Image (cartoon, rainbow, N blue to C red; front, top):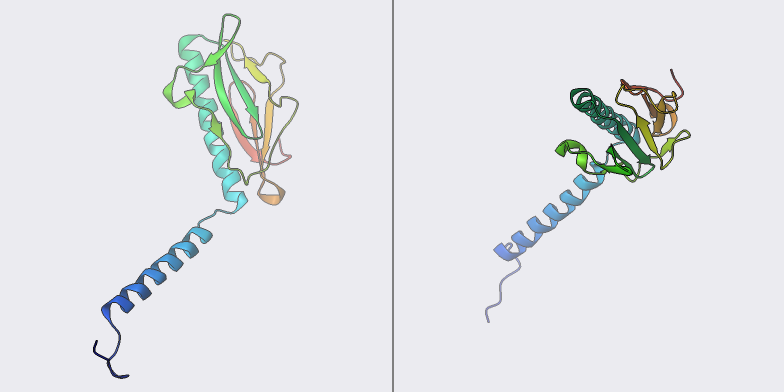
Length: 158
């Protein structure tokens, strides 16, 4: 074994270990900073929900079919009415259950967990719009759906 003197410098292995540690730490910091504030999550989730509702309305108009929206604080799905019940939507973009981010607070008025039904003439069964509040505080957004139009408004607004 050869001894190295105190002025010999650093070995390649030591340099690689330091670079790996820097990479791991910078990755951890980047992941920690990548979480969007809840306002951005509320806005993004509201946009996705309104886009899905608009797509469901277009499909219902094209095929003269009634459809429903089943939603709860965890997520939502778009369904089609079938004999004796509800079935997943045939449009591939609407078939899956869409989950809300777990950090986002969601509340729904009157329709928690039940299917909000829209007839083939695009009139809600109970003649009232569906409303969900996504987020909290000043960044919260309401999604209001009247059977034809889904729109995003500030929480508590029109």
